[in-house]
Amino acid sequence: MPTSWLDTVVRQTRRVSDMPYPHWASIFLNNPVRRVIGRPGTVIDGLMLGGDERVLEIGPGPGYYSTEIAKRVPHGRLHLFDVQPQMLGKARRAVEAAGCRNVESHSGDAGAGLPFPEATFDVAFLAAVLGEVPDKEICIRGLARVLRPGGLLVFVEGFGDPDRQSVQTLRELVEPHGFVLQGWEGTTWRDVVRFRLWPPL
Figure 1 (tube, rainbow, N blue to C red):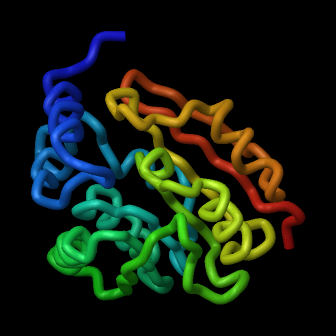
Figure 2 (cartoon, one colour):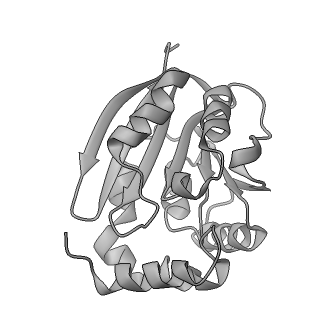
Figure 3 (cartoon, one colour):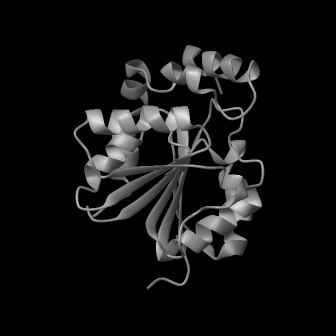
C-alpha cells in the first residue's frame, strides 16, 4: 500500500530516536494537514460517548485525539497517561486551549502497570501506542483491571506506523484477558478496533 509523504517523515523521525515517539517531533503528529486527512473527530464519534464517561487515554501524544474525547464527555473525565511528561504537558495544553477543564494527567509506563483502582474507567483508548509498550501483557492485564465490566477498549492503528498492530495480533493479545471483539473498521489510513470487557454489567 502506498504511503503519504507524512508517513515517510514519521517513519524517518522514529528511526533516529528510541521508543517512544519523541516529544520534540510532536509537530508531525498534531499538524493541521494530518487533522484534515485523519479526521480524529470521526474516530471519536464512533465511540458513541454519552457525555459522562470516565475515559483513560494511554499515550495521548500532543493531544491529537484528546481534545475530541474531552469535548464529548463534558460531564465526565478524561485521564491522560503517558511515559513522557513533556507529551502530557502538550496534550493537556491542547485540551485546555479547546475550552475543556475535565482532564487529569498521569505520568508512568503502561508496561509496568496502571496506577488506578479497579473498575475506574468506562473507556480505554490507545492510538498507535501498544506497539511501543515493552511489556504488552502487563499493559493489557492492567487495562482489564481498571476498566469496569462491560467497559470499552479501543485501539487505533495507523498504516504508516512502523509499530502497527494488526487486528489479529490485537485479538490474540486481549481476548485471553476477558475482552470480546465488538467491531472493527478499516480505512486507507487506519484500523479502529473495539473490544468489550466481559461480562457486561
